[in-house]
Image 1 (cartoon, rainbow, N blue to C red):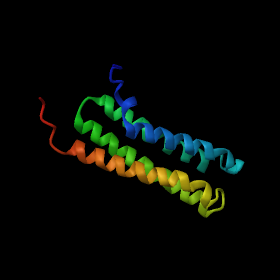
Image 2 (cartoon, rainbow, N blue to C red):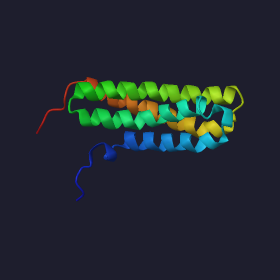
Image 3 (cartoon, rainbow, N blue to C red):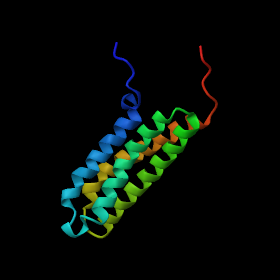
Length: 126
């Protein structure tokens, strides 16, 4: 049996990593004029989602973990906003961003459930 590796074993972290990789994959299709603008911000927001899940997990308290999950949710909303803006101004096609938006929607539900669980009473220990 493999020992628990912490946040790396979390499905929500893995999904966030998948989304970040997908967003990074869209970056080459953005205009070069946006390299230090929207492209950079979109990548940083996407990378921030799994980073905050990991940091919160390692903090050691449910309260801290819940706070970092909230920050991850904010970064996810920021990522979605940049994707939608990129499509709105014609930098990316709606078809190009659709897979990322679908993944973000699923991840949003996962983060919401995790936050609710962390905000609730601790599970009884056996």
